[in-house]
Amino acid sequence: MRFVDEAVITVEAGDGGNGVASFRREKFVPFGGPDGGDGGRGGSIFIQADDNAGTLVDYRYTRRFRAERGKNGSGANCAGRGGESVTLFVPIGTTIVDTESGDIIGDLVASGQKVMVATGGDGGLGNTHFKSSTNRSPRKCTHGFKGEFREIRLELKVLADVGLLGMPNAGKSTLIRAVSAAKPKVADYPFTTMIPNLGVVDADSHRSFVMADIPGLIEGAAEGAGLGIRFLKHLARTRILLHIVDVQPIDGSDPAYNAKAITNELAKFSPTLAKLPVVLVLNKLDQLAEDTRDEWCQHILDELQWDGPVFKTSGLLSEGTKPVVYYLMDQIEQQRERELEDPEYAAEVRAFREQLEIETREQTIAAKEAYRLMRKEQREAGLLLDDLDEFEDDEEDDVEVVYVR
Image (tube, rainbow, N blue to C red):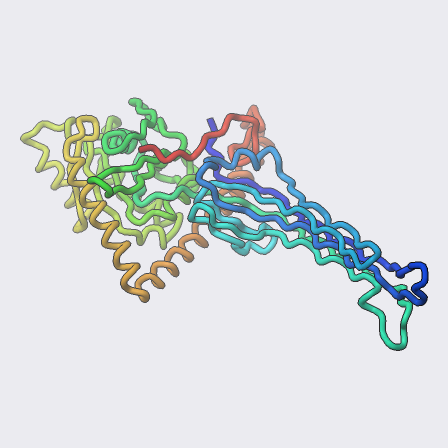
């Protein structure tokens, strides 16, 4: 199953209809004069965020969209009918980028939000517009203007308040299963999670937030190791990062070293992303003897020189998860209230988000190009038996983005 979070499409607005040169001809009406109508305006193309759209899969197979051309004008000063516009529906959280200039055309973060991505061409003028005292019978008319043509990239980033971060098998999926209705696959081997999973976490009545579980990182992810950094861009819209640390890794590795490796990979991917508030969760306490838990956890904190918020949990047994949920809920509500009450803080947050979007987009594109180059070199050297490129389009099944309550 493949998670579709990006698609490149072309959109072409309709051309404007042509104006016409026509003259009034009626019995007993001499010198009727020009009466050519204008051409109709071409249809435009809009993209709209929709709650019912959960995937970009439709735009991986149908890639060209064109609006209707405006109709030509006619005599008796009749203007041509305007072309029908086209509206494309995408999931909430979709960013629209012009591939040629790299400019962001729109960022759709609310249901019903709509942006025009290609403007229809104006209709041509009929000869009525060219009559004057010295030119009573103009035979001049104009053609309609071409509609706008664009190649755009649709980038889907999941909308979540909290993003889970950690090594493979750290217990991220188990934790999100414990605090929400999301049911991601859980197994005793690394990289069980292959796509982002979303869950709505209910703290209390009418108090909830969205948590996102992305595939685990390993050391060297920024250079393409493991699943690389393909899914890190989905953390760009989160408010808080929840760093899950396995206190007793099954491979016998040092948990403090693993936590530092994740932090380093995050900073390599985006220095701005690394500035998001981080909450440390020491997970899988059920694997430690009760009389050694506190000592071992303190050792990890000392090695990390950690002075931020920390929680100790067992996702498998749902122990210690409630305090985490309530702390996250309080922090999110405080951020929301401050943004509403303090315009300067809200402006700072917007600027931070814009910078984060730019960094994650540039890094993701660079990573894809580096990956393609590496695969090409490996194929030329005969090290690969297939030509499948995980960043290229394929015919595999696609996975929707679903917010599970």
